[in-house]
Length: 397
Image 1 (cartoon, helix red, strand yellow):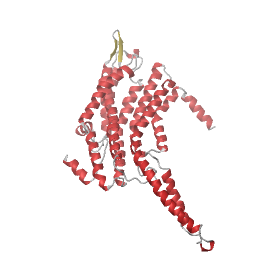
Image 2: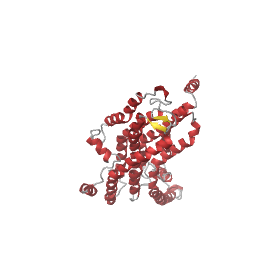
Image 3: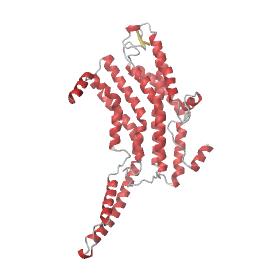
Image 4: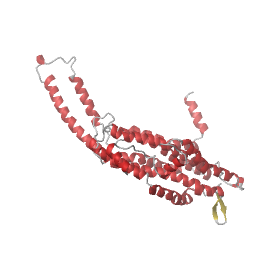
């Protein structure tokens, strides 16, 4: 508590969405991480040994052998979940830490926080870090991952055919030994990491940006990023790239699983795919809208101020170059007045083109492309790869 108060009195402490909390402290105690977030390879190996390897070994000793419809190694969803999505959640830790920490630092480095508001900004950072480190929050995530996630998987997600993880008996479907490890160890680990990221994004990051947006920022309508100086928030959404890729990779695997093993077709999932892509985009773009009121006020004030300045300048320009008698006018050659008029026009154009949220069209397009990348292999379920290659060759012949 004393350290937090001292930090508020001196300067804003460093913000991090990742470095803190019970799981992070467990990493440090078990030497699976060093400060701030090194030794990623150790965490990847640990999760591999806990979640994937036991499934491979237990399923290999399954006496049913070839009687199962879906074997462990042919289970696309499981392989993607444990070998692609889960590692992406782990790799996301240092990736997001570096980018969001640098982005938050820009509030102070760019002078967006007035000196009189630095204590208030520091208090927001400290309270956000306290929430991030909350054991109760992480325990709640753990309970949801074990209880709610288990019900959802059994009722909505698991395959209704004989697989490596279940047996069909007279009493219904029962789990194999590999299935029990998958249901009660591997899946809860995965859900916990996924939900932990979701909670830190929505609860901690959203709250932090909301509180900062309530601080009167020193935005400049003439800033070349056309967002009043908040352009770093526009690009900060790409800090969540590993998290987004993990989710769409899992969606792609779930659709491929249904197509391969249950005879479904890709068009059957078009609404689900569209819905997930839109939700993921909104998930990272929504908190940027918290600054819309301040940006609109800056745009309106800047337009009014430079409108008055422009009126004064063009009136003086008219009197000097157009209203005077021809024999009393100066030679326009070498005069800076015309260039100054052009510069003023360019400055006013910057204000007029200012975005009312720190989100540009190019960011939306790039984010959309990033999200749908893992879904592109699904096209091969409708158009054979050989046909695509033949068409590509024909284009260049």
